[in-house]
Amino acid sequence: MLTDAGENLKRLYGDLGMGSVSTYKASNGEVIEKERRGLLGAMTDFGKNFATGISFGAYNPNKEEIPQGAGRVTYGFKKMFLDGVGGDLLGGVPSAAVHSAEDIALASLNAFETIPDSTIGNFSYGKKATTATFDGTQVLVNGVADSLPGGDAWARVYSGGTQRQTWYSCIQQRYCP
Image (cartoon, rainbow, N blue to C red; front, side):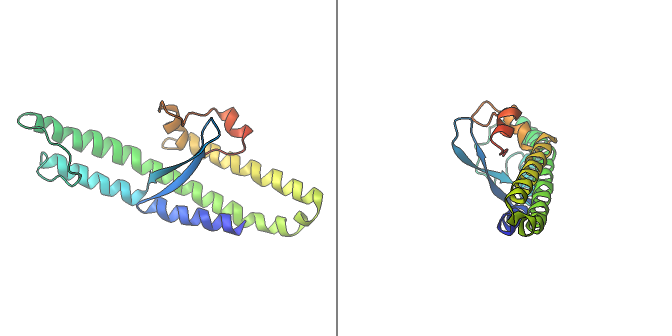
């Protein structure tokens, strides 16, 4: 339990920083690792995109191909508003906040679980009760965090890839990414 709490705190550090790695179970049963951008990473990307846009591509840290002529103007506005404001500020920052809140909740839950687990968990009925209670609560925390704007469920719903999962299969497997 304390190891799980430590892992969640490590993930919190990444979610507040440049990013962290999360895993999820695809519908075919395969466990897939996914990098997710942290708060500092989203803000850094916003700064880069905005600087690239306002300079109409003269500043180009990502070494993208810049259109020539009048296309530079539309490229500049795209980098500032679609990529910078839309993708980084309105997409990346709320996502990092949701992931950070989820990490704090799960770390607290895992740390608190050690108390009943080390007392009544020594008996068979106590072990069943604590396992059912805390596993169900973790699924609930994951479900709430996923459902919030910026949560992982939003990414699964709006993607066409293997990330799609239904709530039913998520709860059935007792694991939601």
